[in-house]
Image (cartoon, rainbow, N blue to C red; front, side, top):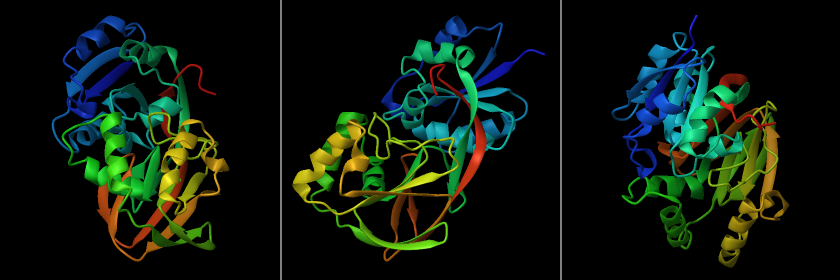
Length: 294
């Protein structure tokens, strides 16, 4: 039986044109191993709908886009025998970078037949799936503000972060992690499946998508002049060494906060209430990682 791969291309992710991608797929995918079928998504949740119909019919569904596109498609096939492939085209590409999927489009296409298929953990926040990172606090605030910005890309994100950090106020969170209670004032609260947000900014350097645990990363309030230092620590994979960072691992997390506000799932903002329940689902997603991923 021939193996087929459905490519779902998000035409607007990362602000990058993808008109030439179908031609690259036809040219660089080894059709003897994987026969491509190519579609373009059109609007919010369309990729999820397409992927749901493909689950079980295609051995592989490939997300051509950024973290949001990956989330949409993975949400539809999680728990099935269909594997997720990724051709990264976003601003951050967090999960792709963590899994050593090439950022180069041609190499990413070739990786779909040369890479290794593994099973990774996924998680849900109030029933909605995420695969790389979810969060509350400053990063969720930035995701919400950034979603209304016409300019995309890493530089725009940094500029906006520097502008917004001046007036951002931390919150007190009540946390229950695997039955144990913690109260923490936090600038940011991240639920890390992989180690990084994207662009190689590692909030939890030792996180693993295969250890059956989430890393609950608490970024405590810090002097404003240390903001760049914390950012540099993330790039150097030493955030966990900072006295402003606390990491607690667990499978089930219940969060209460005083005020409703935004949260994010794989970088995509949502508005939420004062409570959130986060649950890890071990080994629930088949995915094609880079061939050097360990």
